[in-house]
Length: 235
Image 1 (cartoon, rainbow, N blue to C red):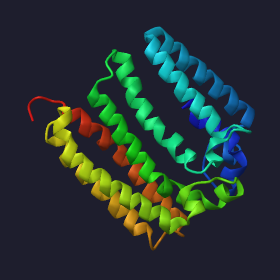
Image 2 (spheres, rainbow, N blue to C red):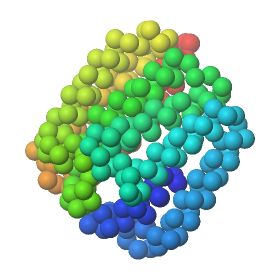
Image 3 (cartoon, rainbow, N blue to C red):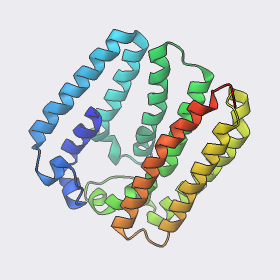
Image 4 (cartoon, rainbow, N blue to C red):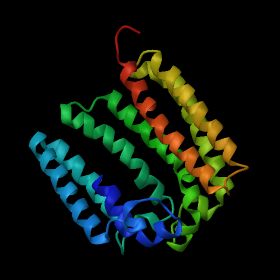
């Protein structure tokens, strides 16, 4: 949460161009207030991590560092081609590792889950950039959708999620997941692909793009649930 608020503080002008309905962008919260809240959340999160174990603290430090470097000048990783996609996607991978670190067991299952989350987000980043193209161009973002165009970005997402669908089907037995995992993952990824395909003709409609992004985000809950159900012994 601290990372998201910090990013909103740094991207204040870009968010105003994109007409994003967020407290800092619309002026209901000042940038100074947002910065104070983000620092408090960063500090509180790191203190909690330190109370658990060293692995949790180190993982949290990496997540925090990437979150800050993503938007703070002069580094501003979000303006570096492909690195912006990798950094955003690494949050899914590191979150899985963080869960393993908390329980003191970073197993192959957790690494596989983290990799799948990484690929899911990496493939989807061009979709999430669509509603903010105007502001991102002003902010000199180097996302795939800006460098190669929106339609290329959408096709990239479709290709990435298609590969991930095949990977989910072929690899699940090697990591000890039951049949629920590939069934749910395949179903969810097919919905992702369908939503992406619909954007090929409607990517200029900002409201439609934002609605599609919200649906994909909501599907993320079931994506995580598929791995939880996949380790239950009675399936």
